Length: 96
Image (cartoon, rainbow, N blue to C red; front, side, top):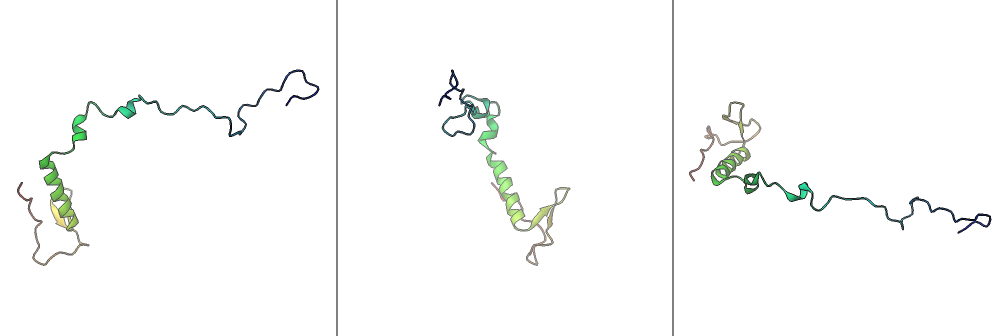
C-alpha cells in the first residue's frame, strides 16, 4: 500500500513476525563429518569379542545376584541382598 503523499513505495519490513516469509536458516550439511561416522576406529563398532562378552555376562550375573566388587576387585556380598545360607563364594566363571 502506497501512501498518497509519497512518491516511492514503502520498503517491506524484514520478517517482522510474518509467518508467510520464511527465514533462511542453514541446518547441518549432508556431508558433514558427524554424519560420516567413525572410520579409523572401526574396531569399536564391531563390539566386544566372544571372550569379553562371556566375562561381561558373568559380571552382570554376579551383580544381579547381589555380589559387589570391592576396590581390590574381590567379590563381596552386598549387605542389602538376600543370599542362601550356604552361599559363601561367588559362582566361578563358567567354561566357554
